[in-house]
Amino acid sequence: MTKLTKILNIVLYVLLAITLVFAGMFYFGGEEVGAALPTPIYTDSFVNWGKLLVVVTAGVTVIFEVLSLIFNARNAVRTFISIGVLLVIALIAYGISDSTPMEIIGYNGPDNVPSMLSMAGTMLYGSYILLGIVVTAILYTELSRMFK
Image (tube, rainbow, N blue to C red; front, side, top):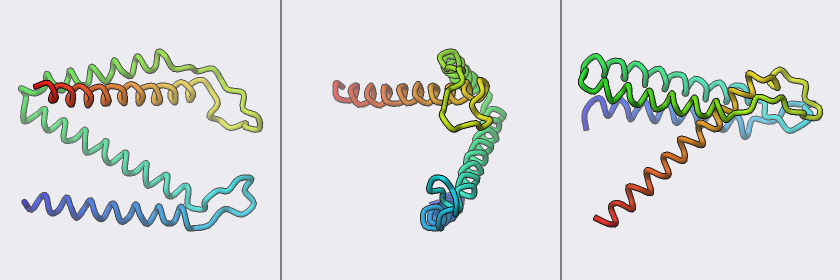
C-alpha cells in the first residue's frame, strides 16, 4: 500500500463520516414546525453537502483529465471521442425532453418554466440513456465471457 493510497483511504473515511453525520441530522434532527408536510429541519444542509461533493468530484475529474491530456498526448484522441459521445448523448436527451409547463395544483413556484423543465428532462433522459449503455455493456461483457 503506497502512501498516496493510505491518504486517499483516510480522506474517503473522513468524507463518509461527515456524510453519515449529515444523514443522521437529516433523518433524526426533527421536523419544521408549521410545515404543510413533514419537512426535516436539516434538509438544506444535507442537500448542500451533496452539491459540494458533486462539485468537488467534477472539479477533480476535470483537473486530472486536463493533466492526463498534457502528460499523455497520445491518449487525447480517446478523450475527445469520449467527450464527443457525451455531447451526442446530451443533445439526444435535450431533443427528446419536454418543456411544456405542468399544471400542478397548489404549486406556484419558479421552477415550472420551460427552461427548467427542459433541463430536468435532459438530465433525466441522459441518465436513462447512460444507464441503458451501462447495463448493455455489462450484459455484453458477461455474455462474451461465457462463450469464450
